[in-house]
Every structure is written in structure tokens, then in C-alpha cells.
Amino acid sequence: MDDLPTQVESLQAQLAAIQSHLMATLWVTTFLSFVFALATAYFAARRGHNVFRWAMLGALLGPFALIIVVLIPSAKADTKVCPDCAESVKAAAVKCRFCGHRFDQPEIVPRIT
Ligand SMILES: [Zn+2]
Image (cartoon, rainbow, N blue to C red; front, side, top):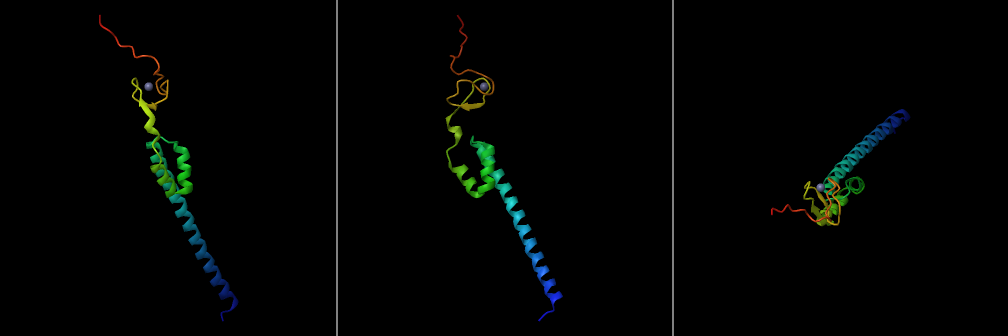
């Protein structure tokens, strides 16, 4: 049987090992959360969803949020392209949110008489 100071030393070493293992796990978890937040936000942006909301979900749910954002229907399906500024706006929009073009007015076609 070891004497008491040797036992204390051994326990301290074990504690230090557990602490460094916990820190490593914490860093890996934080890093993965960050990576999944970025990846999920990237796909959300490409598919016309709320980027901030999906970044949070990506950080919390990791790969699950990434799978969900890829599988849910793209919000870009119901968009139209503004004839004035060529930006994508919602299909139901009456006014372009980028340039203020109004879709309800008939296009004025110059007529040569
Ligand atoms: Zn426009």
C-alpha cells in the first residue's frame, strides 16, 4: 500500500487527466457546433430560409439541422425575378423590396405610331 502523499499525487494526476479530457471534449463540441452552424446557415441562405434562425438550429442540433434544412422545400420556389433590378422577390409581392418596382402596374410598352 502506498503512503498517503503518493496516493494524493496519484489522484491529482488522475484529476488532471480527466480535466484535460473534458476540456478537449468541450473544444471539439464547440468547434463542431460552429461548423454545423455555418454549414446549416449556408444551405439556409442558398435555399431562401432565415439564415440566423438556421444557424442557431445548426449549433444546437448539429447534423440534424443540416439534414432538415436540405430536405425541407426551398423557399425560393415561389419567387419571381424583378424585371427592373433582376433580384428574386416573393411571387406574391406587389412591390420589389430592392428597387421599389411595382408589379401591379401594367408594363408600359413604348409604341411607335
Ligand atoms: Zn427590383
